[in-house]
Length: 262
Ligand code: 13P
Image (cartoon, rainbow, N blue to C red):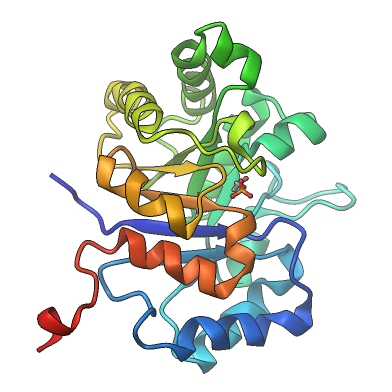
């Protein structure tokens, strides 16, 4: 039983300057044919300084989307130069925080233990943690995908257990991020079963599990049809409003069609 609407999340990473916010939302809103219906949930994660301005643009255009952060501190307050707390992003209108993205893990040295503390901080600020897991190419080739993903989930969720109200997981294999090589629908289905098994152990079976990694309007329908994911976490294609809306349309359980609308 699907408990939630499909969820499409844009991870802008360090892209789209302030001057591009209005154009982005205007383009997403302009075409009523491609605008996602109420049956799709849309979240956008801009860089920190644009959380509030993006939210303002979203309400100005009457676009139906939530904003969230791409990261936050595990601490509430203190002498932590350059850090931003979960409360602070919440004050800017964020409803979710992406945690444990592979770029945070590999470029900024984030460990599962740190991610677990961040999940706790985000949950305590009443925000939804969107936790990313995924194996690298070597682990995949050695047949270790299930082992890696299970370990990441257990180590991220274990210490944080009972500290979050609602949770979203994204399966993002490293070899698929920004490479143009998406995981096949079969892989997405298979790894989602692994993730669901761990979530059941944690009593979190109602959490949504997304797929991320080179999702495009062209491959989204296939991935959605296979039924392995409750939505997508999108990098590159989320910077282009028409591609982003194309992915939302591919996920829509009831695509707008002249027949259905009459
Ligand atoms: P791409 O969609 O550019 O492959 O990025 C995926 C990603 O990292 C989303 O968090």
